[in-house]
Image (tube, rainbow, N blue to C red):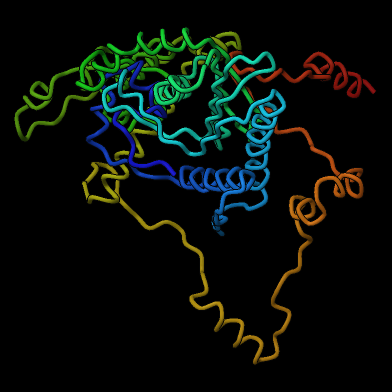
Length: 423
């Protein structure tokens, strides 16, 4: 699995390429893990196990009871099958490809101290005998669709692989793929070796700025995982400015506390009450037309994400470090009763005549498939398997998934209701 993260890592490259100072700014904050990150790490280890097993390497299967084993099996199977098919296709093209799993790549010839770990690197040839470098990256997330086109993480991995192996293998074309099973997303971007190297040269001066902590702070969707976001002045100004522009007529004093320098914020004499901010007045009293909501929708995610990050940061300071927060207090949340010794519970209950202690459940669909094998499973149980449609969700037009064709419409609903009422 990956080693310690580089300052200018590939995984957060979209962030430091668009906002160079962020790389140094977020060094001031701990890189805390999350349940999603931990699940992703475990899923990656399962992916690695399955590919190495196919390659006939001696490897021990990772174990964990913390995650949904059936879903982990399903999404890692998608990745493993993609990798295996990629390798087998190159074999059919008449070559034995070089396959590297969880390979550390170094791109420090372009980015100061830059390195990362690629999930999969395969070097071989296409059906015409042209050299191919194929990079693949596995994503467990389902909140944000990740596209392979001009994906800086993949491009940096590819540049590192080219730097290490490009002088050994005649590579003409670079393939880069995102495998994101939870969103049914397998996205591949193809470019020439020259195009990739030209892009690498274009980010060289940006990387130098980022390494030195220089450049201009800039907000965007790349702020999503920036650890400095809760206290970033640029994010605060943008979020409040967006809110003011879209929703409110605010007195200049509302933004003053954010924009004022620390010295100006503390010039008030001790013992005097703070100046109250002007009461915000919403634009256009009454209902907001739907077309206006459409126009402001893209900005809502940016504003809400900033609000959530600020609240999480302040809460963490209060809960973990005892920092007092005016108007708030730290309390205990609701908890559930738990057994402290399961073996003692079972023994005591059975000794007193209570024997019906366990539930029996049918094994999962994935377990059936592994028990029978895919071919036999399809023959016997295939007729009883279906994949229901996923939950509908609203996403930007930039999301490459096809839109759902709706059979109903507001007009149909209105007509049906009116006809029923008339009866």
